Image 1 (cartoon, rainbow, N blue to C red):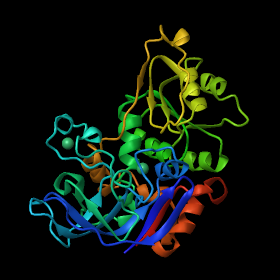
Image 2 (cartoon, helix red, strand yellow; image 1 turned 60 degrees about the vertical axis):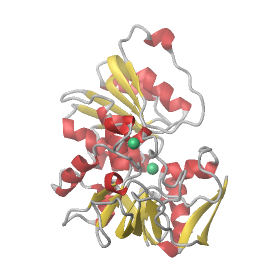
Image 3 (cartoon, helix red, strand yellow; image 1 turned 30 degrees about the vertical axis):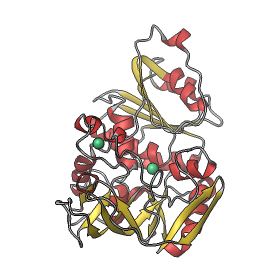
Image 4 (cartoon, rainbow, N blue to C red; image 1 turned 135 degrees about the vertical axis):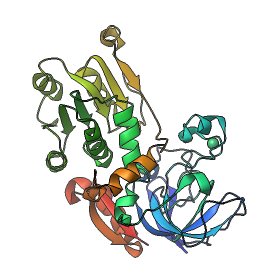
Length: 345
Ligand SMILES: [Zn+2]
Ligand SMILES: [Zn+2]
């Protein structure tokens, strides 16, 4: 089978690999139908993710059809259409029993990281019964790919951790796919204001179409001052960091209101400054989280009921033989206006 393989920092290639086989009784092998590329894959290619070693098939998002299952799998059978979660969970360990699938002792984020991933014709998924989701009829596959990672990530790490409430004020720093996923799902809670901040006017235009009440281009506007002026001088109740660089985390500290929450979503590769000399008396909370995907079944229902439309996040479509072009398009997002790219396998 063909697979997109990480070969070390800055290097990747499409290679011919053996089709994966069942290795433990809880595994399934899934034939991939649609997959996508995540910002995290670009972090891996920069060499930011040491757990992902050269030779790894990338990808942790996708939908497919079950090809074979191990002897212990009872919830799925060959031929079932499934959504593959970016997080594998055994459902039995201490962390899983607490709903913290991201830290499953034999799972977590391993797909396309510590084991071969979904940017291939087939993938082996461990703990299949508790890591795959049956696809309800009537939902387009492309929309479902957004449920493998970015919608639960934006929702759990940004919206839920950020304690967004009716009438509250929210700023989302970063209007890429994850920031936009947080913007879409923040609206479940009817906040009064959602201010999107980015360097790219095109992404801010998308954000306005997705329901942002205000947008700030932080290249040429003093973002913190603008947020203060938009919120009566107070700052925001929830500041969501959806970039993962020191400047944007510091900006969140400059715009959070007293009593507010800074919800970090971004993948950080460098240390950042924490201004406790100002924040110690501000009654704020700072949260971090690796997505648990515990809300995937709920998000599936909101998509099925058309409460949110994840198809709006998809800007480009490629066939698998053009996956290198798909990477280039996704990497050059400022030029290509790419949000999420769908790859049909
Ligand atoms: Zn991802
Ligand atoms: Zn577990």
